[in-house]
Image 1 (cartoon, protein in one colour):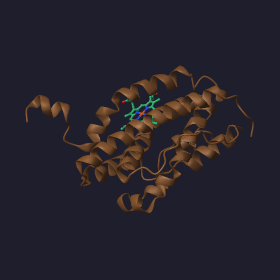
Image 2 (spheres, rainbow, N blue to C red):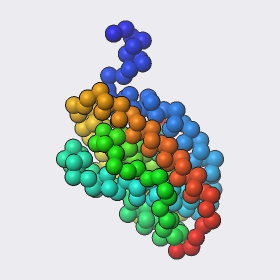
Image 3 (cartoon, rainbow, N blue to C red):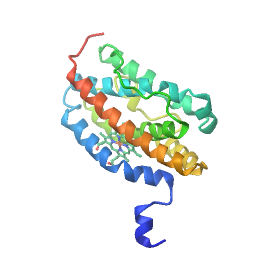
Image 4 (spheres, helix red, strand yellow):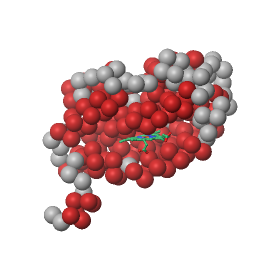
Length: 202
Ligand code: HEM
């Protein structure tokens, strides 16, 4: 394999996923910022609505026995409850589900979705600092962006190590990619939905 081939196809699965989601991540980052979530608590609350919707759609995956067999602390990683508590802090109602949630993904697809959800905890380290400017913290209003138990970097490293160590077929590799891309697309839809709806009071 030439150097160029290596650059095109990273050796590690997680690196490949990083690479293929780089463009959607950049787009989503810009989209989040375009909504000025840190300008007012009301703007931030809409961002939390998107985060809650995304996390609540993944509850089934975080609690799936087959996936827990792969990632033992998976259930504890779920942030749906934290995001729900943030909504209450921000006096924002729990949004109704939005049609189009992930349904019956294959195991590999599910891991692609979880890669994105877990990866989003890295960006959260930056976001929580901005949220502090609105008087919010990991104990009020921005719980879902807080440092996970055991540490942010450690949690990510162990997830990636597990993911990279899995034996998967070529078809499953493709499913992983599909799941990760679908997760970014879904978050984009939910973000649009969250800012399109009028704020409801809890
Ligand atoms: C729903 C999924 C995601 C959302 C909504 C999201 C959102 C964001 C946003 C808004 C930032 C900018 C923070 C700032 O500069 O203030 C950011 C940064 C970052 N995100 Fe994500 N992200 C997601 C998924 C991921 C994934 C899957 C990874 C890693 C695999 C990741 C890794 C990072 C890292 C390392 C940063 C820090 C700055 C950078 O390198 O760009 N994120 N993210």
